[in-house]
Image (cartoon, rainbow, N blue to C red):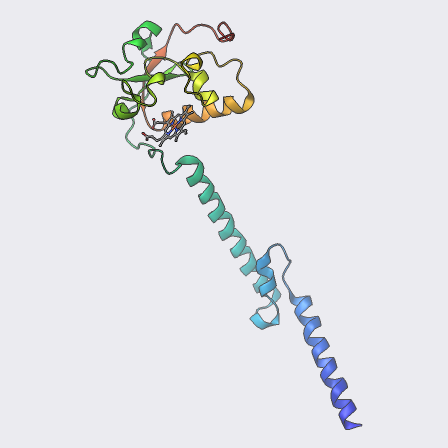
Length: 198
Ligand code: HEM
């Protein structure tokens, strides 16, 4: 008799323990909530606050990771902090050609969507015979958008690019804007669409 009473009492105690754990558990918005129960000794209000803190921290971490990834892929040079105010000097297509890296005594210019960037600092990349020389001394927006290194794509007309390629082009524009001084604007580019057959 006594034994039966003891058994039912312990069963009741076990059931009450589990019921309490389940009821006290914080809203299961993340896997962290599974760590909670009566074992933490925290009130449900305290658990909720703690949980919010964890979620906030996670959000911060994820957005920092994202920024670092999109902003500076590891092989790319970091953004510059000492850029000069952008200039609006008019530059013609003909003038731009002089700055294609063939003359080491001249600066090297790359134009994107008509904005001219001074990339002389990176002569090892844009100089004569270097990997990205096809972008130098001209506006090669189309090739940048298409991620193409073909001469025939190195033109200013980006009117027929897909939405994804346009985004790539704009990302490159941002990349250059954060790294190179703007020295002027190309004033006589062929109108967008006029050379789209290229
Ligand atoms: C196998 C393919 C490619 C590899 C391995 C590669 C590699 C690299 C590397 C290592 C850099 C950093 C270079 C530096 O800081 O001097 C870079 C930058 C760059 N890449 Fe590429 N690339 C590839 C394809 C392309 C293509 C197809 C394009 C055409 C749009 C392109 C355009 C650029 C540009 C504009 C930069 C920025 C250079 C700067 O001003 O810092 N790349 N690439």
